[in-house]
Image 1 (cartoon, rainbow, N blue to C red):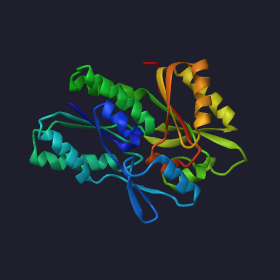
Image 2: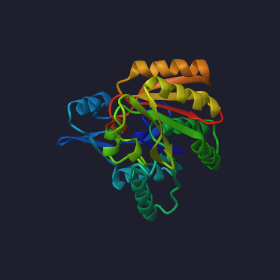
Image 3: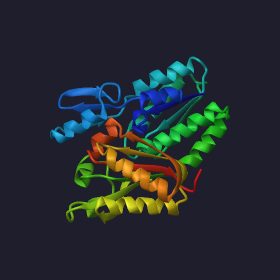
Image 4: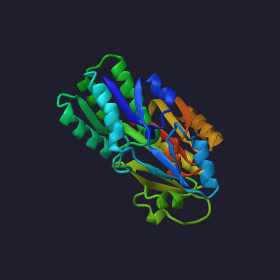
Length: 280
């Protein structure tokens, strides 16, 4: 059984290899040059371009890219599970659908399952890590799919950004008009709802945003492993981690940089927390 992911899971190439997952990258364009996400550009380079006033643009993989990966494993008679970035945020999942449908004309017996996770960044990453674990322990494909669907229903995304206007201008923010502008030092708390990025609350200052993240993690029974990603905000991410380990039942919280594609849309200063509601 082969696990396929896209680069918007914000899992590094090294981590993907550890999980025995093949990664299909998106593409980032800055000025007139295109870069393959994670392979040809780093998050730091993306953030620097934003600071320099050069807004990165992103594009989904084309169906042919997915077809190449699917064909490789179809020829080996290996079952495939693709865990994709929320289809409400990108056409990446639809490219995979087109690739699968085209490939089935040539390989009608190919076993290809596509799952729209409605997740993004390490929300998707945590789902991928668990799925890889189910496969590694020998679960049947039906069991893996069932467990993944449960994980999708429980994954929580909580994040804040420095500039909500920047996020909205990129077209990835839903229901955000009431949150735009506002008073100095008002920080938004956002989440994912039906696969879309949606403002949840707004608070005066980052300290209160972190406090609210802690409150939600406690109320929702977060335990086990959580994950924090950040864009050029490592110290703040570490502060949030310390608070969560002290106040919640989360036992392990890993911190990594947000991926190049996601940071292209969120900008610098973004901090996001991911965990599974109601524990493990």
